[in-house]
Image 1 (cartoon, rainbow, N blue to C red):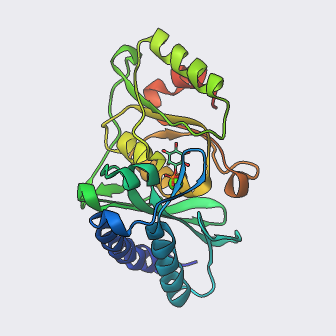
Image 2 (image 1 turned 30 degrees about the vertical axis):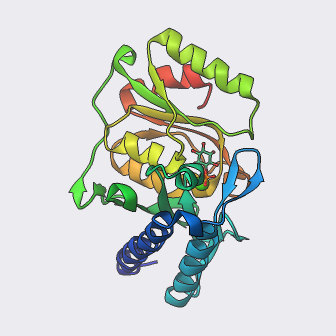
Image 3 (image 1 turned 135 degrees about the horizontal axis):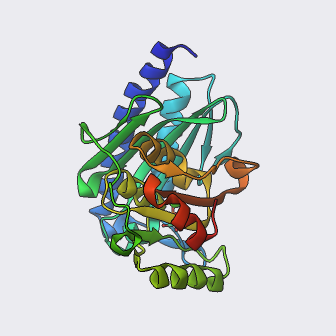
Length: 260
Ligand code: IPD
Ligand code: CA
């Protein structure tokens, strides 16, 4: 793929994600139209998830018919040029009226995370990153925090019932014992973006799916963060653990989380 073809993808999809964000925000403002249901314990679904994913799939297929698409709701196949969509990340927040949710698209070229775009319209934030080209928030360049003292660090630990609660609690205990401040805000994608813009020093989760992190990995990497090799093995189809953080804290956080 030529640099021009990549740039075209980034600009086209930036507009598309912003449009999808406005569509999701419209649902968010009409709580009675959300059609909330549960896919499992703490696994939320609203009609907005399906509608936003359908919209993005249709537009991507028109724009780039040779690329493949994987989405949280509709699945799909990997290829050398694959878009990975999370129509609403932080669906539990979305359904509760909490503004910490986003629309996210990552693009992998030859298995390398290459473009990441995240719109958090209820927060009025748009993140854009391309491999080798830096990361921006609302057009301004962003960078990870320079913090290097774990006793001043704030880290987010993502949780889902896909992993035993005890492993999450053990990771949290080790973090508190080392002096970290710990939080959980309910959107893995925005958790990575918050490392990228220096609001936190790290994000870790024992298992997360590709659509939750495909965009954020590019954003945090381009903002100067250290990121674990999420796409190793069958990460794209079955998920993997994720750790991303400031480079200065990587070694300590690898020990605390057990994620390398
Ligand atoms: C979830 C959120 C959550 C993370 C979970 C994800 P969803 O995605 O990103 O923060 O901890 O692993 O499944 O269900 O809101 O799209
Ligand atoms: Ca998600």
